[in-house]
Length: 205
Length: 415
Image (cartoon, rainbow over all chains, first blue to last red; front, side, top):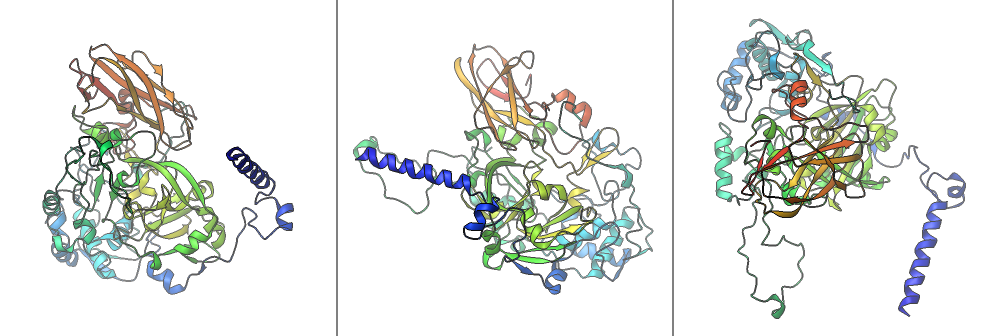
């Protein structure tokens, strides 16, 4: 009895396997005859819905090096200094020197040589390592302050960016930072970055 | 460190100290209610065959005799290492998977979850979690590894480092979800879209730019791991999963995919997750995790006795399958092929094993992995010469364990 049950289960599995082999989703000959099925790499068009402009606008917060994504508004070093003291210094230090797990932000040294690969003790900052000025805006707007991300107005983000760039010696203290001027700020480390050249294979790079 | 139960009180004290100027009350609830390992006193009867045991339970707990645990530091930006030396085989239990967050563990209501796909597409679209689950799904076993994995062992090598603290930022399991390519076909990718930006819905809104080729290859939106919905720390309800790529790119709590024509130069692809080199350059967009291995047994803090034992560990490559793992017991002078547990899967942990008879004399154990591209794990010397002492990520040099004559096992050659 037991033996017969096992055998018939085996037969069922075998039949199912044969069927599966015959009617793969990509086999249009069999799927045309059977119930509708998904024929490989095509658009279904029935799952999900179109996004509204408001939905896109609410989340479309990224800024790239061309300045695309930067909002209207403007900022200055002096306004940024006041904001930094009120909203950032508690973690990053009064002069952006960093504390515990909160990174150092300000410091232009070392000015030559980009020795970070050789010496792990040299601390990276916006001024000595960040290749793009627009990244500062993008990051502060999306993630800072840590306890209240998204709470700063566009002008406040511009103020903090102006403060951080000026303290790092990449813009004059009287510069006004906005949609047009920010992407034009060339960061000292800009030309140090190269694309990944590792490819696997025998050579270690 | 990993073997010490950490009390809730110590954990909270850690938060208060490490948080510095941040007011503790402002931190998300999740940071304050971190789970601590259970410290139940074992209560086994003298002869369990003479007394009935307990009834069935809704969710099983680990044996009170076992204490494998991660290493939470009580902060919302930082890692907790997986106890890889207390795991066997290749699958990481979901509750021991490594964690690394940038603004704590987000709590997201699955009923309110939305994924926006927009940018250079014909139809900007929104998918709910139910939508994602209606699409044809795929499952694959693959590893997820932080590219900072190995930093402790390279930057600050100490004899008392455990495999957990050296390489515990990798985990391996079965991911289930929908291929990203499926969603991109629904939205219709426009000519000129060469990258996509992926962004999280957590408080860090972590974002990374990824070449679009990865989307057409094997990128997926994962909503399950090891047979159950993703756990919150693993990106619940849905995350990006990019097999073989550094884990930071597999954005958790994914809320947005934007098709773009150039990389965004986000903070985590410029200021972080770039690799300064000794020649004054910094390598950028170094996505793939190269071949790597580590012996997890014997390792610190184990103590071994003379006689036969099994050398065992894990090897993996972000470029495909591991084809060979060799083991040396004399510091790299001679190498022997270890056995690889089948099936060996692409971009997944592979378990290797080699029986060894320890004669009681000092020995130095090493493993080196080779993947299907012909790439072999470099020695520490070669790695340091090419990448420099200050390089920040992708530490995949050969690891060494020294066995002292008293049987103590410590990290490092000649340690």
